[in-house]
Image (cartoon, rainbow, N blue to C red; front, side):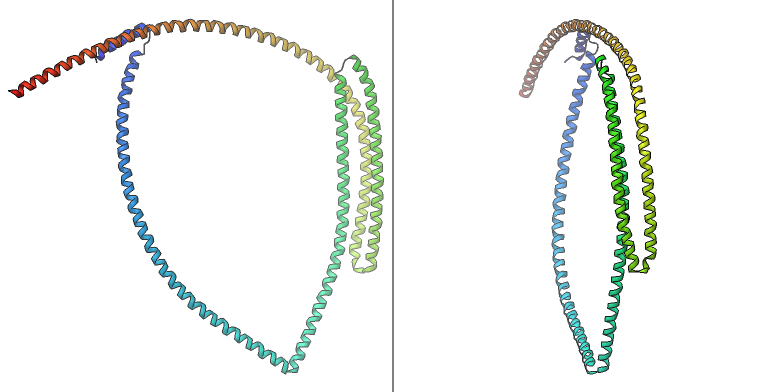
Amino acid sequence: MDYSTLANKLLEFRAIACDPGAVDRSIDEEYLRRYKWCEENRQIGIRNAREMEARRKGNAVRLNSQKQYECNLLSKMKSEEVRNILKEEQNKTEESLAANVKRKLEEEDRIIHERTMLRETEPELRDLASKIRAKLVGRILESQIHSKRVEKMNEIKQEVEWEKQLLKADAMEESYEIMKSKLRDEKLREEARQFTYDKLTGNTQKDRDARADKEESKRIIDRLVAEENKQIEKEAEERKRINERIRKEYQKFIEQCEKDKAKKADEIEFERQLLKEFSAYNNRLDERKQVKKDRINERIKKQEEIERERELERQILEKAQREKAELEAKKLAEKKRLCEEMKKYRQEHIAQNQSRLCKEKEEYEVYLKELEKHRAKVEAERQAMLKEYAEYLKMMHAEILIFHQK
């Protein structure tokens, strides 16, 4: 194949098809073809080398496995021999240990028997043993009495600790009630806020209804506050009654402890101090309740101020909503205008692309026709060259035959 002629033809086709990269692509294709051929040869060499390496590794693995088997067999024989020797030595050691233990047990039995016989034959030793036994019994009884006394004192301390825990539980219950009342107040504020918001978002008729609802809500709030105050007073009376009963029972317990033992003077003084603290705690609790009532009245006043502020907020909110609606209308009009412009631009762009694609398609069809003509011409030239080469071979064969005949 004449590559110079082919390059010229490709240049002509490039001029026809307006494709400046046709020659470069042909050169790249030739380079890729040669590169693939070299890569195939390299892969064949690598595959042959891997096969040889696999054979060498297989032989090495087979030799290693054979050596490993021989080593395992020798180690097994050696371990069995060592195990038999150790077993014999262990049997000898166990027999000697059993004999020593038996001898020691016999010696201890003999000593115990001699001591027993000596105690039975000697009356002084028997009396001494009885005295020692009586002394041990006395010590045991004394320790039992002491342990019972300590146990009784621990029970008394435990009762005092229970009373302390009861007082702590009352304090925790009071804090829990305060927390519940705070949550109830927060819920009432949330309901009042929601009610005022619903009232501000209504029309004229609803505004008139809202005034009536406002009065009704105020009556409801007053009624709830009154009920809450009654509930607080009732809980205070119940708590006071329980505290009085606890104090009386505690006083009885203290008097009983004074009658029992004078040793409890320090504990009784501590309990009296505890009662004083408990009464002071009740006084502080009453003060807190009064503060709570004052806070409720102050909260009612604040609620009225909040309702006035909500009215101003409603007016500001309506103004902001009107401005927002106007701004959204402007944005919507601008968005529609932009959509129309984008739609028009896309239609023009699609029409331009279609015309360009049609033109490129026609140019490509012309390029394909010229390429087919060139391929036919090249094939004809190749067939002619093959025919000439065949005639040349025939001629050379005839000359060789003539040369051999001579």
